[in-house]
Image 1 (cartoon, rainbow, N blue to C red):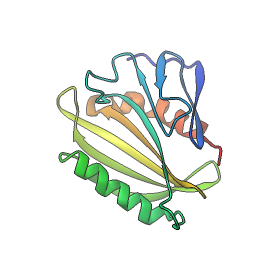
Image 2 (cartoon, rainbow, N blue to C red; image 1 turned 30 degrees about the horizontal axis):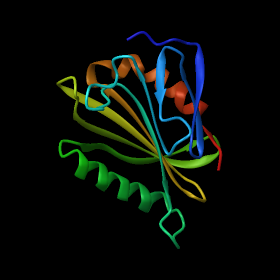
Image 3 (spheres, rainbow, N blue to C red; image 1 turned 180 degrees about the horizontal axis):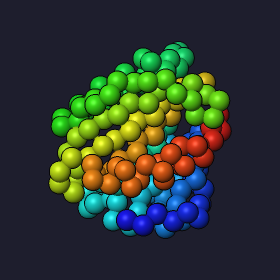
Length: 158
């Protein structure tokens, strides 16, 4: 998969991100945005290569807690994807100036074989923003610079 260095911007609920202009964004201006190259999303909606961004609002009466909310999301992801496992535990990082957690996950790729998923979570006043970078294991190295550039481009809008 060739990755363009010309960027476009996608916006979602609470965030904006730049992505290669030869990829497509679906779900803009909603709480769930998927960005992928032409063949990155398979029939049935499984993402084999791309980025999934989500905004999950705080439960009524609760404030965001990065560690707690990330752990709840990981539990949900593993329930939805029984083959998914944590490859490396959450490490602290930042997105812009905001504290964030980065967790590396592994599982079965919809293309066959293994995939590597890097989950980044950011707590905002209104909820949790999660970004999952998905790549088949054999494309992880090739996608590293693209995913890093996309991560640096994230802007929080709440």
